[in-house]
Length: 233
Image 1: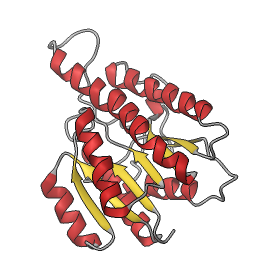
Image 2 (image 1 turned 90 degrees about the vertical axis):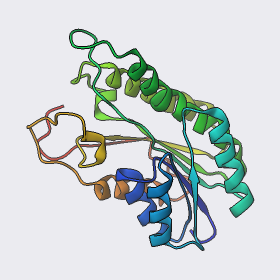
Image 3 (image 1 turned 30 degrees about the vertical axis):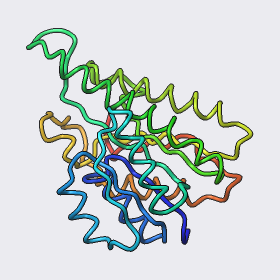
């Protein structure tokens, strides 16, 4: 993997941070993209300035993502793997409780538009290098156990990954949808966790990501659904 470049959105915490660590260990140069400059800079210092680039990026903003791609190419000259991992949930049920239209809009822009923009802006580089696009979906993007808008955004991501894979046929680009269950990350800071199972750790998902990335070029791991043992939905 030496000299290959791995770009990760949502890289400052959780799954993104864990994947960045494993990507560095595998020999990649890693682009760390997220909204939190302070957390990114702390992670970059830990991983080493020679093999990382920290980019403050709001994936809900097209121009911000354009700048992310431009900075990556200026620094490293190529992009080989992209992990569109940025996303969040604040619940937001369809019935009952307080109306939070701004929250809905932000969640759609980050989870759906953000992932789509990452794909659109990086696929030309991935085609050049016969690279790999990974997108973070969710268990609730295939089983609607949480009846809120977050689940709907992840159903959209599931469809997006399938559509991109179909479009990339013949280019050599691989597409992997990563669908985690309950993971112990800051994602859950403002949400109530189900009691049905122990949590996965960010490293558990990061290892699955690296498994898909490490396959030979003719092997395309399309979907990875990973739940903690005992999680019902």
